[in-house]
Amino acid sequence: MKKKFIFLFSFFITLNLFSQQLIKNNIFGFATSNTFTFFDVNSQDFQQKVQNISPQNLRFPGGAVGNFYHYNKPAYGLDIREIDSLINGKFPKRARGLISYSRKSNHKENYIKNFISLAKQNNADVVLVANILTANDDDIINMIREMLANNINVLGVELGSELSNKSYFDKGYEIDDYILAAKKTSNNIKSLFPEIKTAIVAAPLVKDKTHRHTIWNKRLSKENFYDAIIVHSYAKVVKGRDQYGQMIYEENEGSKDVSFDVYKNRLDEFFNNTYPQEINTYNSVFSNKPIWITEWNLQYSKKTGNTLFQALFVANYFLDILSKEVFKKIEITTFHNLAGRDFGGSIFQKKDNKTFVQSTFYPIKMLSSIFGSDSLIIHSIETKNNLKKYTISNKNNVVMFGYINWSEKPQNILLEENQVFFKEEFYGDRLYSLNSSIGEIHYNSNQIKSNGSITLKPYSFTLIREK
Image: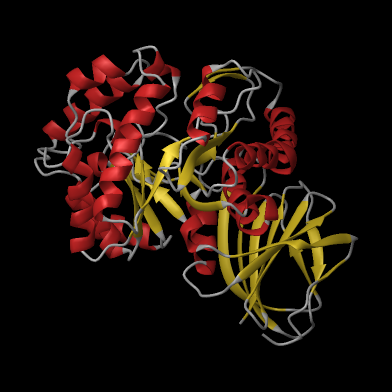
């Protein structure tokens, strides 16, 4: 890239030269929970949609579904008797719906076949979730063998999903049960595939040192049979009661303009303080073990789902994870979900047999261009006026700049005059603009010839690179 590709600001910026990392392709991953129940992964339309975001890795079978998955049985191989006996909460009802839908759709093959097809279509690596509760010892081994037989790289195996949750504890599942099952599964995997990493379920952090979550993490921190820890992250900005990444009661905090301004301030606190402190605590408890964030999203809420706000959060999350030193131990992330029936949680929603593209699709599509390349480095520059800048470079030159304008005002940056650039931008008039409302959120990509400056739209995510 030539020296002319230099960006100047019309306001003061502070550059933290230590806030930079090598871009890790494994950060650009996606969970596939429920995808195969509701979507035909071999349809040309769905294939094109997924290929537009170019996933680097995919997770199978999913969270709670993974805990009850059975290999070589129809669909996810769920047994409702097992589920009823081992978990409380909403999942038993959801499982009944998945079983019913798969039977009505005449899904007789195990969904691992569909998953392999999806992974091969996108040349993606995979993360597998082992059913350590009820599966045959050979199930996870057969899953790995089937991936390898199809020339699919297995990044690692999760030893269960969210098994520290109260929904399992209320059925009598405790840390001793988990350690016994997780260690047995991990040793079984490593006896046959010593190069494949395994990761244990870390419990959510609490301040109470006597809480079962604190005890869970302390006990696991003394074990050495695993390679990484699993953390799930759902940024909560809406006040109310939440459960397992979803709001079940939401408080009224004023008009949309007022409340979304409050949400924005809470999200700023999340990125600048809450989340870095959380990751630092996990680093301390688990002696800097690698971290896999195998589910992350904005806490699902009817207020923020499928909004511009959620979409900008997704761009911000990816770019901060990639660029900030505090997150360097995070090796893998898989976004909450690729496709399902939920509104705002998945990237693609199936409703009334129609596929709807959610707001998070656009920033993910834009960011896909920086993954899959070798030796790219990204660093963040903190700026004033709610503008965040990220610089992406290779060993010798700047490749691209990214900007997230969280402000309601346009912001100007200076460019070299009479040069041609390629610009992608995603924006809307309000943070609460819905992607399902026509004309509220916009995506543009075009070539521009600089007259010396460019205006970043309010509430926008913009990528700029030299043509």
